[in-house]
Amino acid sequence: MPKLPSMERRHFELIAAVLNEAGSHMPIDMAGREYIARRFADTLAKCNSGFNRERFLKACGVAS
Image (tube, rainbow, N blue to C red):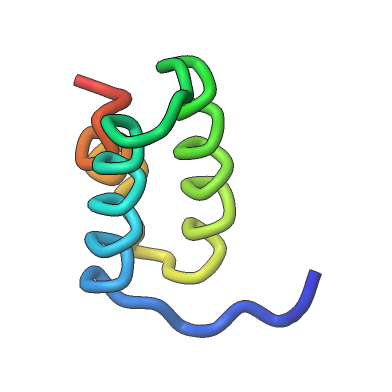
């Protein structure tokens, strides 16, 4: 995997918004959307030590 760039909250919010919206525009079930969101969360956590995984997943619409 290439070196990951430094990412900030605004980047995480943008990604979460796209994933959340994609669920209503694509033929993907909740399990598929959750899988994608969790994979993103795994990688994004490596970009920023302050990354809040639960907040991100909630913003993606896959966790309450």
